[in-house]
Amino acid sequence: MANGQNVVPVDQPTACRNIETLQCLEALYQGRANVQHSTLVATGVRWLSRKCSVVLYEFATNADENPDVVGWAAGGGSILIECKLTRADFLRDAKKPVRKNPAKGMGHRRYYLSPPDVIQVKDLPPRWGLLWIAGRDVVVKKEVRGHPERNLLAEVAFLSSMLRRAQIRIGSRPLSEWLRGENRFEAKRGVPPNRNIAVSEGEPKALRARLP
Image 1 (cartoon, one colour):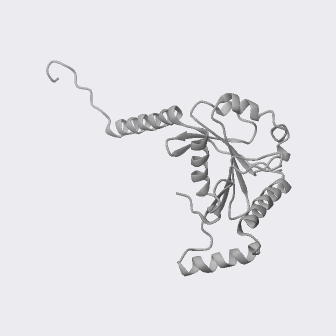
Image 2 (tube, rainbow, N blue to C red; image 1 turned 90 degrees about the horizontal axis):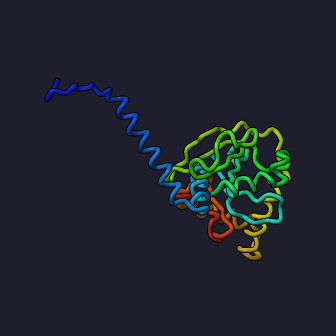
Image 3 (tube, rainbow, N blue to C red; image 1 turned 60 degrees about the vertical axis):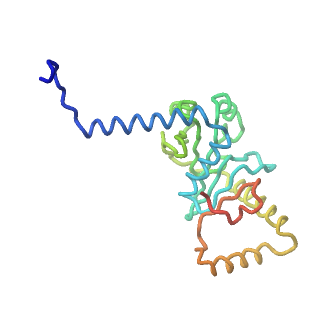
């Protein structure tokens, strides 16, 4: 008894866990209020760069599919992220031919990234994963199962389009020669050759730009 009132003991570990849960929820819903599509893409790039050695984002090509973010891991597996700001955008995406026929789509592992509650796990197509934005971080709501069949030709064409644009930007100098020169330059600076690369259509110098 204290001041005539019952004193209820507090389990300290449980209290800490509750505080952490509240902080996580606060980050989730604060992110939902302020998020834009460009924020989703930037967050997806940061998250994917921890898994992939090369990440491409927001490239427009003549292909049937132009993913918001796509990357290739060191072992050759591809990971795709589609960023959806609203539920209406998510429902429109489901009508694309590459969604109706998953074998025609890019990405061995495929995720949707959205603000909290815009997409629910129950809404996902088979084998897709779900990511929610939480400030500058990502919460994995459901992990992917992987697509055994994917459109490798589309992935090669997507990469070829990026290389053609890189060739145009460096001029008449062969791309392979330019890359060898970059490797020699970075070796002198002590930069490892297998560091993560992020490439965007809107960043002419991003062929060798590290992610923040």
